[in-house]
Image (cartoon, rainbow over the protein chains, first blue to last red):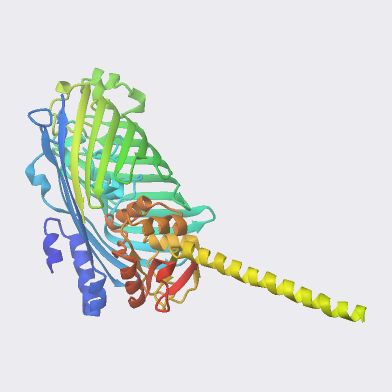
Length: 400
Length: 160
């Protein structure tokens, strides 16, 4: 059971469930050769160099030669013990600044997937375990560089500094696919315990001492339409995440309800993608400060495939933490921090080069106005962060 | 005399004309069919293991299977999908002609399945010869071949 070994870093339930699943299948099938023949192993490795002029991003990027503390390593295995059953799990080691111990491998997903129906016009399946949240166009594979259009995903929607809140959940998910005259409709939904990483404790409440736990199951759903040739994609995603917060004995409730509208148009040599999100966040109870605000995020992105090896990207990405306080003036007046920490406008351009199918080199430049998604762990004092800053990223990625 | 002679002469003339025309038509049609055979030798056809109980599939179904979203045949058995490398010209022609998608779209669809726990990747083969052998020997196999590689060991599936 080498599988259970690789899960020891995670607390129990999902790993236990998977082990029971694997044991049950292997016991009934005696791990027949047929099952072993369906085994697949895949993985990826990315290493980036982040160079900034003023603020730090993912490590000490503004000093010396930059920060090499952005590393992603993933390894997954899958098996099909029966034609309609899939067992799949991925272990992820990721460091994005912070402590070296952050790279400790975690279970990214681990599911038993059972397809109840799979016909020429309809598919219906369930997943039990830790499943990736279907959120926007990129969330489910956000750590795998080859599925990203750029080194950093648009931070207004795929914020890395509080990433664990929407990453994956432990519970039950369902997915359905229905062919319709002009294309395919896909529905995915899940209910489960959300993840609460140390990033939330550091990031969500202005550095106030807080311990965070899931208040109950979170719910997520996505309806996606893809036209026949994949030229046109449209999706609507929504989630409801509720957390219990303990501010040194003072209980409070934190809620996060985002909606995302996604649109994409693909041609042979170019794609245009846009996503728009409204994010409601509230904190009620005995907190140092309560709030109820709706943030707004959107980006517009153009990708150009210059040759089969080279592609180029141009993107404008905008984040506002509170639509009632777009410039952050009220926030600054309340003495909570600089107004420019409440928004970020990011102009990005980048290139990707794939000399072979398994190797990618990427470079991109960001010009950013505002520190709305700048990680606090890299910049302890928000007043010391510069409003206007520049960032250059270089990344090497491998896959198998 | 005259009328009867002319009655015999006309059919003879007609026969000769017909024979001449038919002969030319035959030669011409042979040339044309040969030319067609030359241009269609590299035409891509979707093929399956002979045990697959389907002669035709819709383009939507074919696309869903090659995108790895549909895992089983109608009889419940597992589908084994085989593909050539992304940059193989035959793969690009297959993707465009039979599925109406581009190779980079297929690769992204596979990555999104494999790295999210939603599915598996197709089996890779290095050449059309290997594709032929795998399709012929793997129950439930689905792939594609140039016309010149078709024989009795595999089954052609028409995409409608």
